[in-house]
Image (cartoon, rainbow, N blue to C red; front, side, top):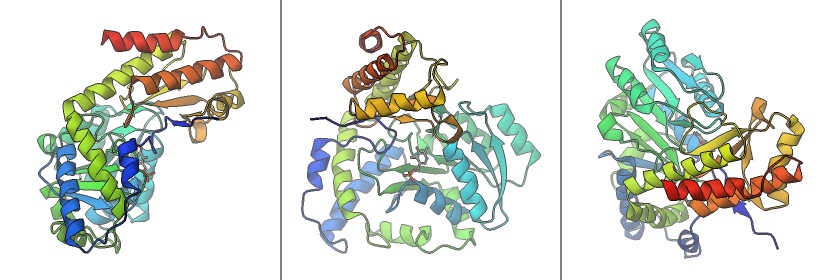
Length: 381
Ligand SMILES: *Cc1c(COP(=O)(O)O)cnc(C)c1O
C-alpha cells in the first residue's frame, strides 16, 4: 500500500466532508434549490474577498478568469503594464497580447519581487497605461508581491489594479474594498479546498465601468451578462453545479475558522517550513518568500537531473507529491506548498519525505533535523 499525499500548489488536498458532497445527487441549476445554494456561496465569497461587490463564479480554471478580465476590461490597442515575475506573470502578457493589447512588461529576475520605485518609474514613462496586471504571490517562484503598494500606485496614477490572487485569496490578507483592489481573482483548486473547475472574480465600480466600455470580442466570458444573471443567483451557462455544492461546505469551513486565524495558520506553516529548510542547509530561492509556498534551491552539489530525482523519489517511493521548477528552473528548485487543507503535520510529512529522498541521493542529512525544526518553530510561534 502507498498512501498518496498531495502537497502541491493546486490542486490541493480536499477535506473529507467536502469530498462527501460530491457523492450527493446532482440538482438542476434552473431551480430555486440551486438559487438558494448559490446565494450561500455568493455570501461566503464576499466574506472571503472582503468585499461588498458581487463575486462572480465562472466555470473554468483560474486562467479563464484571467482571460475573462482581460477581455472584459480592455479594447484592442489599450496599454497595460504586466509585472512578470514568473510563469503566471508571463501568462498575463500572453493573454493581453492575444487580445491585441500593448504590453509594457516589467520582467523580474526569477524569485524576485517588484520594487515599487521601479513600477512607479514605468508608470510615469507610460502615462497612457490603463492598468497594472500582477500576481499577489507568484506561484512559480514563491515570491510575494507588495500588493498594497502596487494598488496604491495604481490609484495615485488613475490606473486599474488587476490582481491574480489565485494562490493568495484565503491565504494572505487582501482586503479588496479597504485597499481598493480593482480586480481580484482566485480559483477553486487552491486555498478554497475544492477540485479544479471554478474560478472567482470580483471587480470594483471603477473596473465595472471599464467593462461597460470594452470593445474586445467575447462570448462565453461576457461579464455583463454574467453579472446580470448572478445578481439573480443564476449563471449565464450551466455552472459546475457539484463544485458549487462542495464550495458551500468548504467555504463554510474556512468561514468557521475565521479570516485572521486563516492568515495566521498560513504564516505559521510558512515559518515552520523555512525553519526546516534552514536546518537542512537548503537555501531559499526567493528573496521575498511568500506564506503560500516555500521554494528552496536544490543543493549546488546536485546536477539538474539529480535535482529532478528528489521530487521523483518523494513521489514514487514515499507517495508525497511536491512540485519542482518549471522551464529554466526545472531541477533547480523545489516548491513546498503549505496552503489550503494543510496543517503542521502535513508540513512534517513533506519535510520528512524530503529528508529521506535527500538521504537516498547521498546528501548529508541528519534524519529528523528538518522535521524537528518544524516542531520547534511550531511551538515557538
Ligand atoms: C494556479 C495558478 C494560476 C492558473 O490557474 P489554472 O487554474 O491552472 O488555470 C494562475 N495564477 C496563479 C498565481 C496560480 O497559482
